[in-house]
Image 1 (spheres, rainbow over the protein chains, first blue to last red):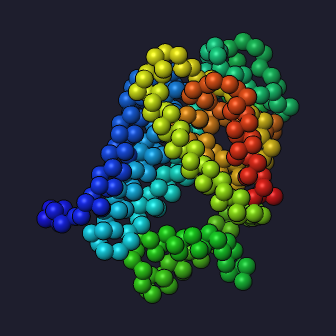
Image 2: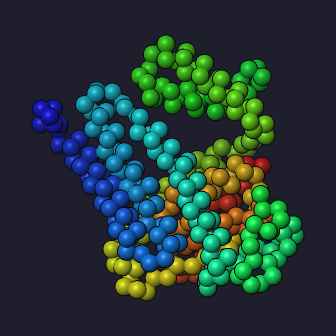
Image 3: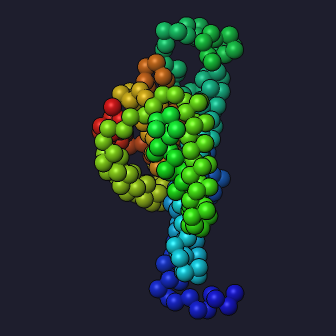
Length: 137
Length: 162
């Protein structure tokens, strides 16, 4: 890595700062994932990694590669955009699956389903089979 | 013209991505344009409903507001994890927020904003009643979150999408 030594300080310092910022936030996100107690709390921790955790590392990479290549390298922007677009999908899947399970099991502290005209209100006991509810799809 | 290029904005964005991933050259510009045009036509075949953007400036404003909020909430959540939730004083809760947005495009934008901001998670949205179920990591006041979502984000989204 001989070109590393030729890197001027004004490039190296922001690259290092962004990299440390991103790595620290991502690490904190994973610590939170282990430390937190409930499933819904755990949903929040990894978003540190997908927001500024990823942004920090991507910015550092953009700066470093742009300097060494001698032109603006912006591939990382595409990674960032794809992360932004795709994380809500998995997060929503996980959240809704957990909510569905908790509602069926009758876990306390979970808001009930919104009453709708096309789905009859559940009889009130936790034994109701969700597959019997019409209009689910 | 519309038949040949059904989604000009989407095509332009795809050409930009193509040129970002490859280096800029005339050959890549032509190839990228062909790919983008074909992709836009395929997209038009799946989703015929067009998205009308009324005020793009409102979206730019929203972009900067959300950017600042993401930085702020990153710090907030990181501090909460480091201090183990203010040493056990933090509590999370669900909030039900009645939304005025109905169109899928601004709703998906709102979903991205809520998800990208640490501390809030989009859990459920009821299409008929328009009620969004949000999970908030550090709940202080329910009314605060309602005004945050409704006045800060939804207002600008309503402005930009008719």
